[in-house]
Image (cartoon, rainbow, N blue to C red; front, side):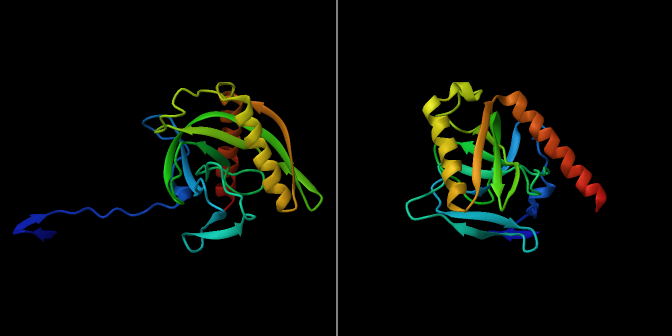
Length: 196
């Protein structure tokens, strides 16, 4: 109870939730929940540290290189590499690390990544921020200019090359295939939670 100018008011305390306590899909709208790890325009790659409940610097990009769009993680999912599934969020402005963005899934760039002689899948899901005005008509990857998709692929190839990894695009697919990958990631997450 707080007194403001002679009046008493009830204030609620809202606790921040850990990213893994957020559902994958928003129950009201059906949109995908994505927590931004690295905002558009950042030359620093951030990663969530679950031990400290904060974002930390993962690494610095080379001079002149920045993230072209917000890059985030899907809560309550696991990729093959043990991290949450990643999503590139198409939106006209960047947000901030830790921002929860509702996203309309539009497709996936399926890819393999090779590091230290080990090759595994490292697909890049692509979604549109529901709040976006510039991308509001985009429903599938086919709605995006071919050049934009090529630039996004090139970004991931060069980003990984700079870190000593090979990123090989395998194909571009729509929202149905992207949703199936998320469902696999949700199952992997729940199976992992059951083991702990």
